[in-house]
Length: 79
Image (cartoon, rainbow, N blue to C red):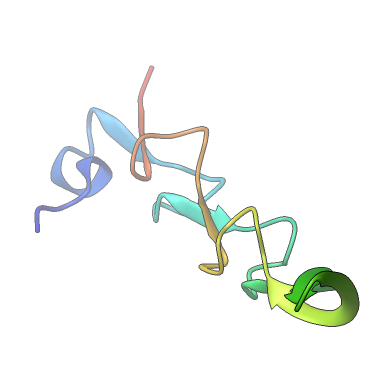
């Protein structure tokens, strides 16, 4: 895998301050855990039930990370 642009070309690209050059930030919904506490719907026979407990975060799909929307893979062009 190649180096990020801020390492390969330090005079042209700078490291993103928001994600610290990684290109990913923690999910705001689950705080980077990948799961949330809330209601969950389930089907039991012909009835639909609702239970309260842990479920996978729907915004990050359990990974706990989002792509940084400010930079391109952790690098920002200078000037």
